[in-house]
Length: 316
Length: 316
Image (cartoon, rainbow over the protein chains, first blue to last red):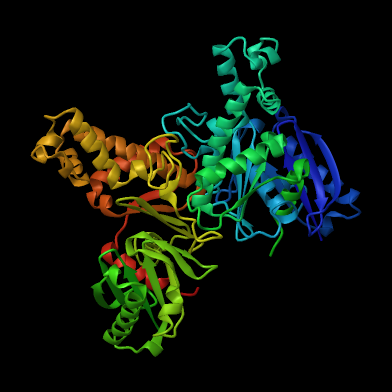
C-alpha cells in the first residue's frame, strides 16, 4: 500500500506518493490558481493524485488513502473546510468533491499540523510520543502530536497556538484581540520591530542595509545584521528570541512534550537562532528541576507537507 | 470492586471508598500534620484507606486501587513526588511507602487534575471526551482530560496552566517569571487589585467595607461589593473577568475541549461570575464561526478530591 500526500500552498500544489515509513516515492506539482474556484482546483488535485500514484509505479488501487494539508481549519463534524483565507474557501466540501474522481478515504488537516506529523514520523521528532511543531512565518502555526497521533481537540481548532494570549493588551492581532503570541514570535514581529527602530534611528545599520527604504526591511535584514554583530539588530533579535522562548514555556506548561520542533522561515536562521533560543528558554522554563522538552530545528523542509499529509491516513 | 480516593490538603486528609460510577460509599478523615514527616503521614493515610474500605462494608481485598490527589507534581518516571510545598515534601516515594501497609496499585496526581477527572466522571463534564478544569484560588491550577483520560504529558507537568505566559513583562510570579496567567486570574489578583485601588482611593467603598484596614481586603470583599453594585468593585471585578476570559480562549486554542469547568474559591461567586465570564469569553474567542467549548461551574465541590483520586485507577 502507498499513501498520497497533498500539500496545498498559496501558490503551488505539491503531491507525492509515500511509503509506510514516510519515504517519498514520487512527486508531482501544479499551480494553485485559487481564482479558478474550488471545484476546478479539487478536480486538478484528484488528477495530480492519480499521476503521483502512477509515477511511483502504482495505481489508485494500491492507494490506502489521500491526505491533504492546507492553510486552514477542517471541521470534521460538518466535513467542511469552514475557512481557508489564502484559497478564498468558505465551507468547502473537500472530501465530497474529491470522491467524484477517486474513491479512497480522504483526510484533511492544517498545514502546520501536517508538518508536525511528518517530523514525528520521519523527521527530528521521530520516535517521540508527544511533540509540538511550530512554524514561524508570517504568523505562528502549530502541529500537536499527542500519543503519536495528531491532536485536533473536539472541534478541530486545537493547534491555534499563534493566538495564545501572550502580552494581553499589546499589539493588535488579525484575529481582533491584542497581544497574541504570533504578534511577537512570527517573522512579522521582527519586521515590525526592525522598521520601528529604523524610523526612530534613521542612521542605524538596519536603515543603511536597505538604502534607507524602510519598507524594504525584512526579517532577514535584521537577522543577517544580528549575525554580523550589529548591536541594534542583536538587541531586536534577542528580544524576539526572549518572546519566542517565553511562549515555548507556555507550550511546555500545557502540552509537556518530549520535543518542540521549530520550522517555518525563521527556522532557516539555524544555529544562530537555536543556541540563543535554548539559552533563553532555560531562563523561563517553569519546572527547572524536572525533565522538560528539548528544542530542535525541523529537518524535512519542503517535503514535510507531502509526507505529513500522506501519513494522516496511516493507522497504528 | 471499589476504589479508594485520598484527598491530601494542607490541613486535612479526606479518604473515601467510591464505586465504579463515582458514587462515594464511605468517608473518613484526619488532620494533615505535615510536621510529622512523610513516613508517619503516609502510614496514617494507609490506615485511613483500610478504615474507608471497612466503613463501606468491604475489605482491602475488594479494593481495585488507591488514588491520591495532592497539591504537587508527580514524576511517574522516577515514581516520586519531587515537590509539594504545602506538605514540605521533596522527592517523596509515596507509592513505595504505602506499599509497606497496603498491596493494591497506587496512583498519584495533582489535586486540580483529580478534581477535573471527578467532574468528567460524575460531575458537570460527565459524558465529554475532552474537558479542562481550572481551579481559581490562591493560584490557578488545571486538570486536563483528553480522550476521557487524564493528560499529564511526557514528564507529568502538562497542566501548569497557571503559568501560561499571559501578560509578558507584567506582575512578578512566584515561579520567577513576570506575567503568568495566575497573577491575573486567581483570587490573589482580586485581592491585589482591591488593595491597590483602596490605597489610591482611601475613602472608596472597598476601604470602608474593611473599616479602612486595607490588609483585611479579601477577594470576597471586592466580589460582594461588586454584586451590590459598588462601581469601583464592579470595575475591578470586570477587569478580572476579562483577564480570566482571555486566558480561557488560550485554553481553547491549545486544547479545544467541549467544556471548561470552573472550580476553586472564586467559583463560589456563582452566576454573577458565570454570566459575566460567558459574555467576556465570547468577545475574545478565536474561531467565532466554529463551535467552541461551553463554560460551566464545577458541581462536586469538596467531594471532587475523593472521587477523582479514586477514579485515577479506573480502567476503560
